[in-house]
Length: 331
Image 1: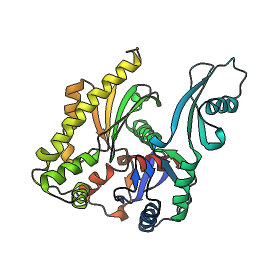
Image 2: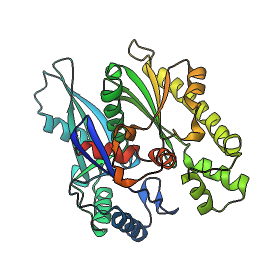
Image 3: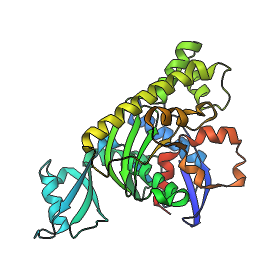
Image 4: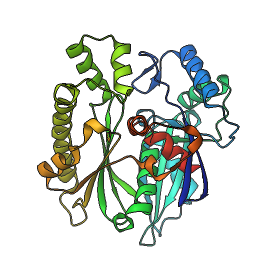
């Protein structure tokens, strides 16, 4: 959970945040498998968060939604809503779907839409969980769009020249890495990579003979064992670099190497802690594409009342890309 305030989009302040790891088997493949325990953990995190903020955005997992881009010709007689309903009816009865769409900027007379839909029962189940936990969301988004919001916020502030370029983002999370290719602020290609923090934790369990809980505690801690980098971090980084190279090849194959497919920069989100230094240089060496490791939440000024240890915040900020992107939307 992340709480932001802002005088303007260039003056964002991180007021507070809470990271509350969920025990295994509560969320499986993006679905809530243990509803009651899920509600209890949200309640506990919300009590720790202690905020009166009413502008609350929550995220659906990408795996639970269908995202599609629609082009409506300027010569079409259909309205935007009519075209959306036609698209939805091709997949499922629209009475069983929750959906939303957004018109996208375009350089021609056609209308471009991003349409996101999900089974109504999945949306209702998640909304019920937050309601039962005492939270009333005002809007719902998708985790991958939250990552895109984080990226857009970062380039607008730090590198506006990238706004119209093609950029590859690799966002590392607990169970997976989201590969997101964007051009002019729009999604052009995405892929899920089955590699995340869980693999690092399992390496720690195996090499250090730790329990699951002990391994996660070490992962979240800024203090690691002296051999952590060669034993845990480097093998993970080597695997990540291989997956990045493989995903780039998929992207180039899918794009047909058109003139706009050249990637101006690779950005790695969610892995910018002390033990990850040097990763960007390794990726750049292997791909020959300029690479940066970024935590978008670093855009925000820290509320001094939080009194945060900088090493611990560097570790924590790896986990805040999605909630930061959700909170930015509410500003």
